[in-house]
Length: 147
Image (tube, rainbow, N blue to C red; front, side, top):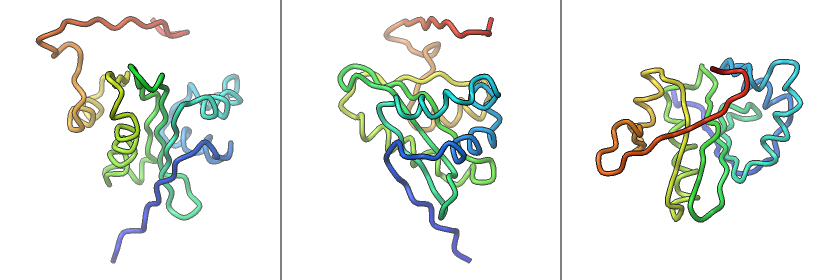
């Protein structure tokens, strides 16, 4: 039996309910808890680029980023519903983003320290800054509520 077709769409037009359901499905409570829930559509609207994956009317994945379109592209979110993970959808969404910003010098992301995450990003050409040899870099962050 053939796998259901996944459609890739570019654009910010996503319903609040679809977004909330997708982010909730992967447990990203920073976006779905009651106090911050209303910020999610605004974050999507304010993103430079949004690409999503659909199976029929179901939002199964999303990637979004911010860029000055010259020197930096920052991949803010990439998420796939758990039941669709491991099917190459995340790679499709990321490839779409990287193609869109291929002319930009630096592509950056911040991710969890889980082995699955590290392997995924390394498999698509990202390098952990701790592994760089010719240039030593540091990353500094301020994240509310996190030590």
